[in-house]
Image 1 (cartoon, helix red, strand yellow):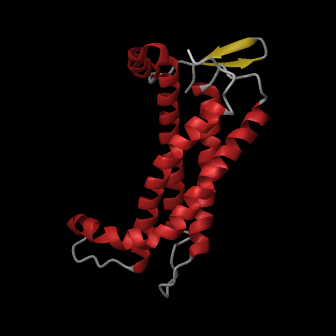
Image 2 (tube, rainbow, N blue to C red; image 1 turned 60 degrees about the horizontal axis):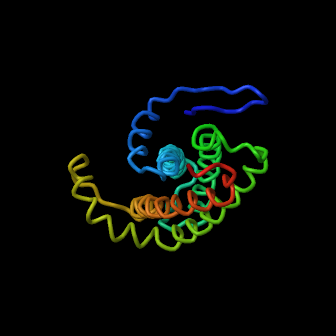
Image 3 (cartoon, rainbow, N blue to C red; image 1 turned 90 degrees about the horizontal axis):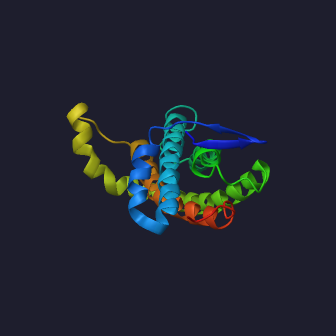
Length: 201
């Protein structure tokens, strides 16, 4: 995914089919079209990061880091560790794609400096997200399981939810809410500090 990436004096151009609809939408915003284009690309990158994030948590909770043990006790450390590993994987994905595709013209700082700023801004979002997830996942699971249960029973007749199922569902719901809020924080904070060397038009 990317249009151009400066390597010394050479420029690499990568064609991306998503550029066509993004540019078509952004062009409707006049003077703000470049910022809208960047925001839309940032959102696409965020969706990819969300898939990495969500997928990593799902795999970890289903395998080596379950949110509850066999006795039904909640394992908050496992929730924190699983979401932290997922956050790091998504951070690497997001930084790479944003540097290559969303902000290919931002090169006044080194990749290391930009990664530091991007990582710091993401860490602020991560801390807020982690506090939100760890304080809300159980309650959200209990609240939403009755809503989801009829759908689950269409595929698994007689399914009886467990505490672990409630907590897994709650973790996923809390993550969705957290990701939406943090996406806006990340875009505007990174545009202000990490990528403030690019023109707004």
